[in-house]
Image (tube, rainbow, N blue to C red; front, side):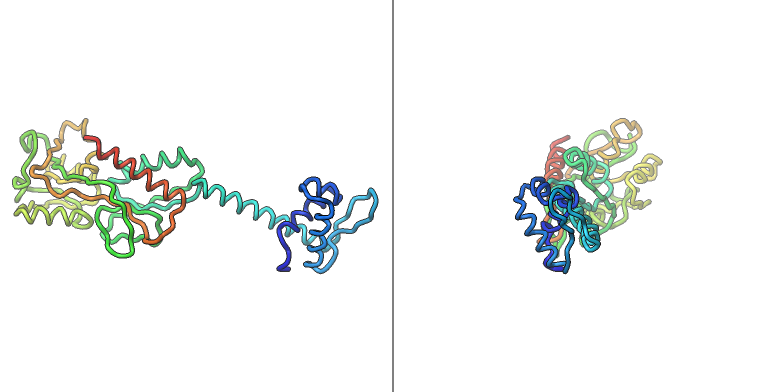
Length: 298
């Protein structure tokens, strides 16, 4: 049975559909002798005749063995066509991409990337997995957005420097930039000390600035709600503030920090040595374009 080839099965299906070797040859673009040779090779492989050949104008008839072979042969041919179609769609970018993300990227950057990918490849399958972690796991992901450099068997592309700003209730600080030293001992709402939050607090401590953390919460919106409630101010990456759209919020004011703190760095990570699918490769290109546009905005 290992000698059965798809071309033999295609010839058999054509003969069964057309009722003659001659019409099957015309349909396939072969000579009649070529079709006969392919059927003979098939019969040798399966160990018996697949057609009765009455001769003359009478149509050929499929044998009981031929009926079994044809039923499974049609399934194999359909599977082969489906495989070829899937490979063509994959090469065109209609595959699946699994992307790891975190909240400010999910709110600001990823919607732009997803929209462009789906506009270009309406049949693509995009899966997003959001997790706040300081130990990125890439084994089940094609790409991952992460706010920090990662050592080990990982390749990366830096996308963006995301500067920190101070968010406070309007009137708590004079208009304009605020010196980080003014935050020493001041009540502050903050994220849990993982990911880039730990680096932020270390950067403040190196300048002798130790805010009094009165609330820690993982959600950007909860941080801002606690600031509105008067719990304290918050130092947040600009991207998190952009995602919250505070321009119409009269109760809050966004201040630059001068001198500024080292910005949060946003990277796109993937497993070292991994061959990207066309869809994943295009996602990287779009991510670079989108973050370049965002970095250029005020």
